[in-house]
Image (cartoon, rainbow, N blue to C red; front, side):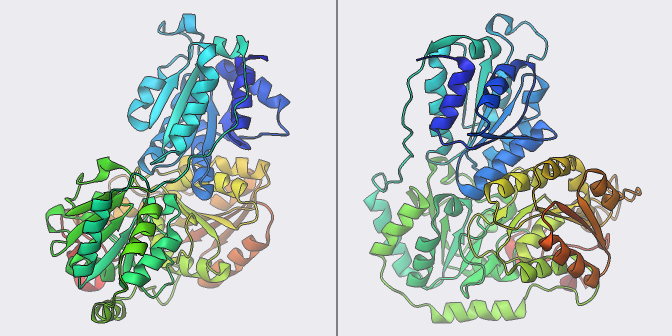
Length: 557
């Protein structure tokens, strides 16, 4: 059948099972939006307040479901406003398809109104991108874009379509979508055999889990593996929930703000089994001193990650879920009672502490965990509040912490929370923000109100850029350059002005009451939680130091 380019785009999205798009219209993409209007009963469009919010919302939708998220924008500034969201998704391996429309083909390269080379701009931050100048290639390219975004190590793909291509017509033939299948066929037997030998020889094994384990859905295989080899488990920020945070084997996050138990334990282990991690600098600290008593076994779907930051003694290339399933068939049950008891002593000696009085970040997270039963979907911005959410909320399942890890994008959380709430309407979705982060994209509260979303926005308000101030306090002689935000902003009035319910808490009792109210509301609620400007995230590893040198305020005394 003969269809226009705009019609083909919508039909291809339907082929892919797309039910929600986040975006913002404009002149170059008007043909697509006109066609989308005719299919509004099949595909829901969420009009965000800013294109960056659309890209973050598509990201949150994708992270919380495992599906490919979709966002749209017009040419020029509309397209460039997606860039931060695309880069965020790229750094954290999030499946995303961003569709932009450009000026017509005859106008390309002529500095036309609202023209920009968005394919060129996003080349370093996409898994792949396309500009489609031939309508005959439109449907195959869109299908290919979704396949690339979802297959293997996921990531964002951008498809740029000149406006005249959306109005031309060609023959369109529907194609039934086939989901990419996981397979163990490419896993090398020799690699598995070497890994089994290393595991059998180990007396102090440690399992280190990253975002790849979440993406692959490896939770059950991971639990079986940890039990079978009798090993403790730590994780990265992106790996939260891959292994149950309430399990006795779990020792907490590793790295700059990881627990002392995990940092000291990994420094003493003789085998570190890294599953779906990329050995980020925030995790490993001083690379030359990282796990220097251990052999490294690295499991990753992406060969480019092997030996990139840390040299592995043995590696297995493959989907984490499939690799662990193979290892579970091959390894013999083991017991490391003495090693496990040693780590339990660390847990008792170095517990994560919450100040006994006053409102604080750790208290907020503990209370949120208690009042939600640990069953909420937590989204965060970036900074101190993000680390407290990682440390004090215990994630029992994968895809229950949505956060920007690799790029560290301030302003990410509210848009991502909108996407996660739309994808998970029955779940309690909570975005935890610092006051600095909230200011970045707070206009998306209006989007949440328009869509009648019951999400909860927690502002951890210390009137400063908390994490930057912490560094200034510890390493820059208390010179608080451009980090003070005490300017009279009233977040309660701001929330109410956008149609949300606004509450303020300055004490523990006020927060518990406000949060309980928020849980019962069916509309967006913003809670302004006022804490001290000098509260810090502990433990901490100084830049350039080994993770075994993690310290707290008590150590500084």
